[in-house]
Image (cartoon, rainbow, N blue to C red; front, side, top):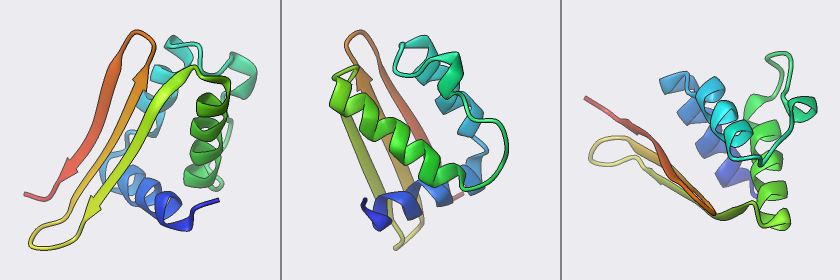
Length: 94
């Protein structure tokens, strides 16, 4: 478990409210099943990190990258690449 990646996810979720969109993408790309779809708000970043790691292990996700810069402005980017699609979730401080 990488706490920096979990902190990055936590910050991205907090600033963009993209948690549901990420889960929908994972469901659409068959990285997760409806059974894996979380119900509740507890520890979203940790749960999402585990889903992404499982996707890499099963090879349904080819690449997962985390980018988090604080200076000079805060920038967060999560890139998910599956066998068919590339999707980016980004926060760029205005």
